[in-house]
Image (cartoon, rainbow, N blue to C red; front, side, top):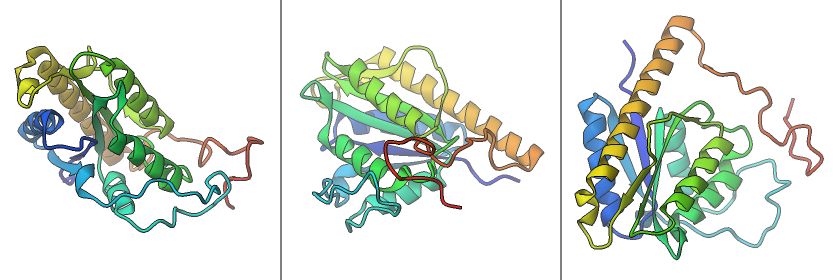
Length: 223
């Protein structure tokens, strides 16, 4: 019997507002499918911005800043699916999420891409503008980490201004529901493949990271 599948949601909003409401909706959809759903609110963890060390392109070990980021990364590595959810601020990704994808990506995930083959979902929340731009940025970040994105129709973008407005966007919530359903379908499919094949790597990634063999720096696979 397989362990219960799990989705971890990363909430990049500075408030308990519309993005949190959308993730609570997503949690209900997941739980109806028997999937464990946990949300990490980035506003609740201590997270330093990238420092001036400047050795990110050469350092072969994890970031040395002592804060809450490695604990969140560990939760991501343990999950079957990950949702990145962020509001639009200043026509771009909210600063908490921007800081997190920089710190987690450069400081921890780049060395051996531990999120490879995990199922990703992207949600952006906006009043009106730039929802697609933020959705696209987070999507590219998931692809960089070799995650699996499952098409679910229209992007999961939700439009809201005041607190509570997100729950009135019926089309947006429908797209969120479809996203979670499709993520769950793929997670179950990958879990079945692992059980039947005895293989933990459903899709072999090849090189340990995308920098192997490139001349841009010395970050190469270790023997």
